Length: 494
Image (cartoon, rainbow, N blue to C red; front, side, top):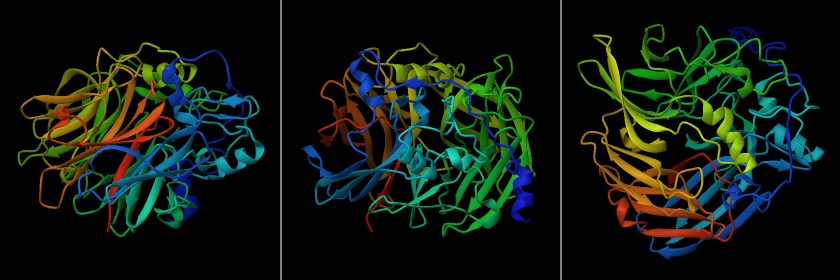
């Protein structure tokens, strides 16, 4: 298939993504903000040069490699400020573990959007949740690509990931921005989500959603980085889908009743404001055979919204089990994420871990929703798509003196037991990832970042994954706060 034919199939040719520049925005500055708002301001510099963290405790001897993180960081430019947390240009952080020390370095991803707006000293392109009155119309998604959600080491590359457009190549050592990634000539510019799943054999699976076209793009990429397959499947609508899961036989998608409204899209509203919540409709569950993408099954769960799935696996009798962070509605993405940018604690339906059992033979499906308010689920990466026991999430306790999480939690999904660590009321906990100790062992470390609001410092902590309540075995501090981010991954040295 030729590139033009493929792009027409996706609805990406011509003016399919043309967004007029009409809408609202916030100005930089403003009234006095609460202490926690420091996590939603620009970093102290456009590039944070290599600095050794001030350490407490002792790093494990077998922990050598780099922990990469990404997130929106340029929230203000000139006299303009974005009104939604998800809009800011991506800044990638590298925490290098070597000889008992941690060195930190961070740089913005210099996408065409970042470069053009830096030269103009103003935001001019539409963003996920903000559209300025004089915004430039854009003809394709990569013109507004902020590369601000995830960063993934894969096939000797480092990929900065967004949601609706291309991945961007970064230098793993210097974090310098390279070219946008095109997995094949005809796929250049096609949506490539921020949550690929790396199978136990090294295969990378991913998807992309084409807004307005009702297309789900699937990818299968070899461990070498070579594209094996890509195909666009038809959906009846364009739901907002941020993540998916794999088992050894299937791809699993949750499609919430939060969908793009064609009448709103392109009428001066931001991308998120072009969606509607259909709370009287179920959340769809789509299961696709890995080997034959034409073999698809649909199931239904009660209406709900989600960002993230932790893991999925299936047994020999055709039962798939998976977890996800469930919200009763889409209030966080439509309202609360804007409130955070204004320094306001806007009430919303918090996320809770849901455990799902889906029987492919009988067609039955049920879920149990747990009590703790959680987010950012992760598992041992060696268990991706396989039976797993431990799920690691952030958790919010009643003591939190801010709107977000202040601890981390380990849940045994088989026994139901939990263990957690509370950083304290004045700390915002971010995603923590599992780092295996060595091949062939089930033990490992849990590594992640946090923001100490009271001391205005960013933290990086290392826990024994099986002993969270004991507290971090080592913790490093930067002498300044960096903006709160989203996702990261570990690459071992060598």
